[in-house]
Length: 462
Image 1 (cartoon, rainbow, N blue to C red):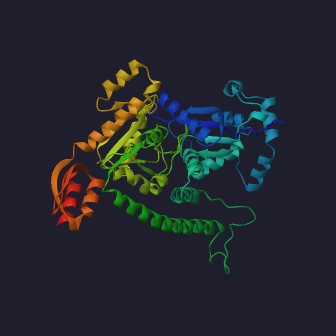
Image 2 (image 1 turned 135 degrees about the horizontal axis):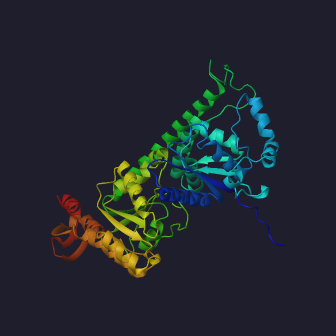
Image 3 (image 1 turned 60 degrees about the horizontal axis):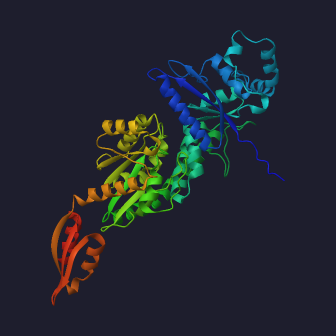
């Protein structure tokens, strides 16, 4: 018997074109929001846009557009006012309101909502391409009868779903609670009354205040646990300082994990989804070089990345700040890749990762024609136009990495007495040994290494 799958939840997008934003930028932003929705498991069935000088303080858009939006969800299109009992009564009778609209439609209503879906195809989620205040989200939910998620909520939900390691789960949970705290609502049944009692609320503390205090206490616990994990991660980074390090950074879904896989031979997750990678992975460049070069894959960036997430993932992004070479991967096949580069640059500045030397990799060249490649090469002369799917391009990038670290190396002669033979082992692991010979007094080495490595080897002989 064929297995029946339940349909995916449907979503409608809402965007406002503010002053200074051209229509193409709004289209690009909504297309990205649609990809976020797909990653979250939602099917986008439509979108509603409006040009406004600013977001409406009540429900983001004007009355007409609010009714158009409600046409996609089956809501009333009106924000109920008055006491809670009246609002509940209005919410219980959406069909009556809808029937009234269908019997006596307003002038132009037909043109405003020509694509409104049938009842069984209505959207149950509204995704807003802006950050909303708690009251705006609440008003939209009342007017549409659907769940409302702003851009930050969508990104947080994806991060929560994709977090695998304990560190990533803690980071996401801290950001989620920080987002949730100002949006807590009172329930019914007089829960807003003040009171006290053993094990309950403090004197004069309302239920909502109690909930917020619990959230603050939970965030403090999570931050203490995360701090312990970050100290261990910091220790591991310090140990890696003796090796050459490369960090892959860039916009989400630009192809960082694909390059990580082909450069290191690791089995990191590669998916055509936004934020498929949240945990930092560190692997050695393959075929392994001498001295060893470590490559790390980092969490991707995106426009309007919530500040709480940036703060929570600061330790993860420290991989980019502390590396010797930053490789910025860009999806050159994306029409908005220049805007994505700007977002990446801004977020790298926030994390203090602007001092490291940077190599720009214009990725996914297999999707470009010869003319587009030539234009990119002319427009970005210091970049390399490559594809992670082409073995020749993989080899070319590996050679660029090796050449970068080779230019800083110097040669030196070292004499290691037999009593200090551990220095010989360290030289073989941290430097390139060009020649080695032994006599009755010890070992003569000719090595090529970075200046700090040579200094450490000489210190071991002092």
